[in-house]
Image (tube, rainbow, N blue to C red):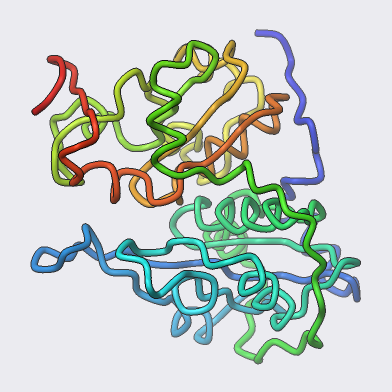
Length: 297
């Protein structure tokens, strides 16, 4: 297998690097964790639960906490975790201490997808000096590194906006992309959801023409990402490496950012995330859907 490098090696840092830079005055570290709980009785496929109590019980020293639903999402949306408007999101980042000169490190618990979601949101605003902590909180604690209960002390910042509106797309953009031979729709959910075996989002199945690249399969047993070469191979096996444009999706625009992160790091220039994803697409009878056995009603 040919060796493959990341387009931006600074977009992924390891625990040793972070431990050595904890005292950098420009560094801003954030716990991005969220929990999704099955909401059997509700209208949404899951409830969004803040991880603030976990964060306050012990976090990487100096780290602040990003509350995705409370501070960065549109509460008027019928879907969980829908991205708020640019001014709201930029102000929320600034209130937590990020400005144009910051070096940001994002980590999360149980899944690095929460970190890549915030990495993608910062990129949407035009901020590129952010990195994901490889292996997240679990890797840090497994190595016996220090934790803190002290509150975050970052001063308020102001983050400029140089918007990249094209990197989040809506259902109409996805609908048009189905018949576009230059666009590859990439499903980051598990293979059972992709195939239609698991009707997690209302109607079973996937957006027609999609390829399967489960974000969990890009992660090694120790919780760190596979090597860029192995991820490039996974893209090739999924037939997702030759398209001119990619739109990634999942259940609510979170897992999809893992695939989007790696598509960008492997040199693909035109990559977008479908905001709301199958939470919106699945229940909508007017939108086409397919399973491994063919189109679904």
